[in-house]
Length: 289
Ligand SMILES: [Zn+2]
Image (cartoon, rainbow, N blue to C red; front, top):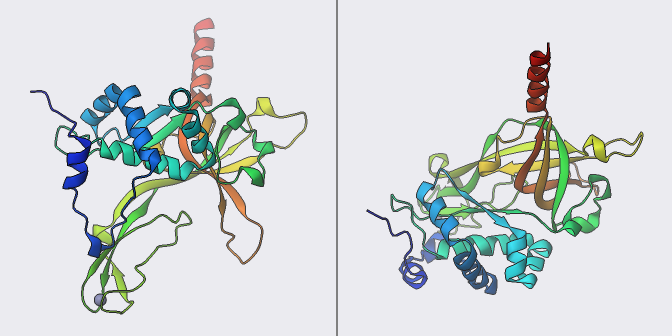
């Protein structure tokens, strides 16, 4: 039996219940969403069908920037200038296509953009405050990788007085937990219901300028990488990678005016893995002996 993984966009949208009293964020349909629906339908339909068949084991789609640029130059430009709004619209567009996996679960995919234009490729030493909040790609040699840790993306709070329950989507990247402003009973005391919260994996890493890009005697510049979801546990120290993401500022721990920069990682392309190279060299030597 072949599973029909598409329902019509309208049917799917109209059938969706809106829980106004549960403080659900209602996403407004922006022009970008409609453009992306057309883009995915015309350029990625078979890819999406394949991904849906394996969802949620596969939960990301790799989108080629060059294809987006061919489809709509302005939309592609907008992705570079306002990445979060455009990426969210792309995600929303996929949701509205009504894709289902064989178990009947609605497919929600992460957008992984690759092949950014050459002028969005920035050397670590050339990163300035002008790049903040822009979409860009860097070449880096991974120096450290932290353990992956769970991070709340949807927090469930229960009012301590009346028991009303609130779902609060967590969008603050600094890790500060957003609580409901106040309860319908006008009180402000909530318990976090940990077992009902939704978590994703998150990980920190650091990359430095690859040695071949260093100018004589110069110290390599470093950049923190914040990694989430299915991109965690992909990097090991020694990897040379091309990373695409949004340059962000990290709030200073103490009160101050100097901020650290980090890259909120959107996609990772492996260029070279030192470990494999070493193994290859070893086996090569072995056979030569
Ligand atoms: Zn209450």
